[in-house]
Length: 277
Image (cartoon, rainbow, N blue to C red; front, side, top):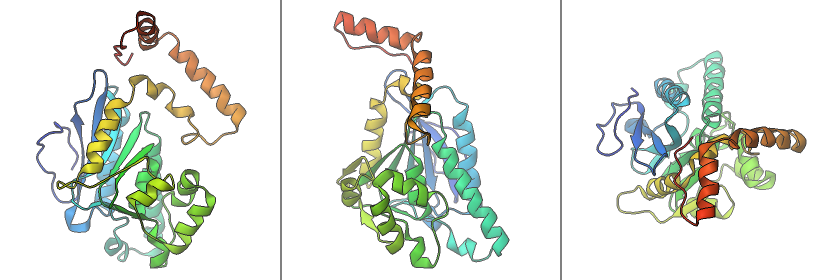
C-alpha cells in the first residue's frame, strides 16, 4: 500500500508495503520520505513491492510542496536486499526479461525525480538495493552497512542500472572489480571510494544513516531543484550542451524571489529567509 501521513509515529504499512510520508524540514523545505517495509523478504524487490514504489514516486513527481526525498527502510538491519529471487524462480524467461526492464524503469524514475534524493543506508543494500541507492543523488550509510552488486555470485548480472551508475560514481576500475567479484563492502569503505557521501557509526536504534540523511535534507536549499537537471550525474551530454542547459536554468533563477532575497540578505549582512519561490 502507499499512503501519505506524518513522519513521526506513523502506522506501520502492511506486509509488502512501500509508502510516502512527510517530515518537517526548515522553512520552505518539505521533506518527503519513501518508507520501505517488507520485513519477511528483507525489502526485496518483488512485483507488488515494485508497483507500490512506482505509485509513491508518481505522487511525489507532481507534488510541488516536495523539496527533498529520503529513501529509508523500516526493517532494521536492511535497506533493500535486491531482487526477490524466490519470486524470480517462478518466472519464465520472458517474464524475467519483462520484470528486469521494469526494475530499470523504476531506477530511472528515481533518478529523474525533479528534486534532490537521498538514500539512507542503515543495513544491507545488495544488488537491486544498491542500484536503488545509486539512482539517488546522495547516499548516507552506517559504517556497518553492507553494500555490493552481488549478482555475479548468483550467476546473474546487474540489470537495473548498476553497470552504468556505479562506474560514474566510483570510476571504471573500482566498478569493474566490485561487479566482477560481487564483493561486499561496508559503509566506511564505501565512503573512502566515494560511493557514499557520509558514513556514520550505527546507533542503538539502528537508524544512524537516516538521522544523518534527515539532517542533510534540511540543509538543502530550496532553489537547488532549479539546477538539479543539468548536474553531470543527472545528464549525460557533452560539456557544450551541458553549459547551454546550465545557462537556461540560470536564466530561470534570475527573477525568483529567493534569488532576490539572497542578494538582499548578503547586502544587509543577515541570514536569508528563503520561501522556495
